[in-house]
Image (tube, rainbow, N blue to C red; front, side, top):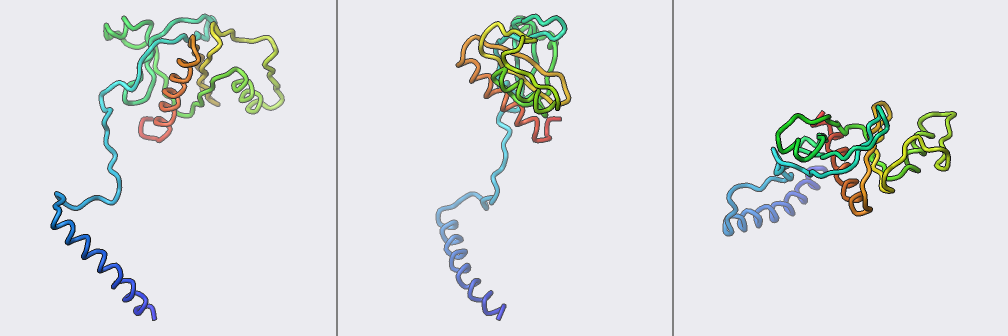
Length: 178
């Protein structure tokens, strides 16, 4: 019974395989085609993104304009200025985004704080521990690491940086850039 069923399926598939072989021989194809997509590394040794935004320094709660450069490792390098980057000075710091979550509002941030620290209820209306210079924040939140606070001047910039930071988180979370 099993062999009869196999024979019937084999006959159906043989015709398809023979047709594909004849078509391949006639059209040419330069070798067998892989069944799985091959991952290319088109961005190797290239910049993913770079630009300026404001970063809050946790030590003194002051905001500084920083130049951020995202290489193909998807780690974020930040510099005092674009001039410092252009002079090939070492970065002020590097952020490995693995495990981070990108937030675009203080409400999202306070919700995460409240849900991760039982018994502590942070309210948006309460006295802010951090005052943003513009109304478009970007916060890198991590359950066990230092949070990173950024800010931009326009909603369009916020959306652009949000997408970039999300890519950094996604690519560093895949385990290849740890």
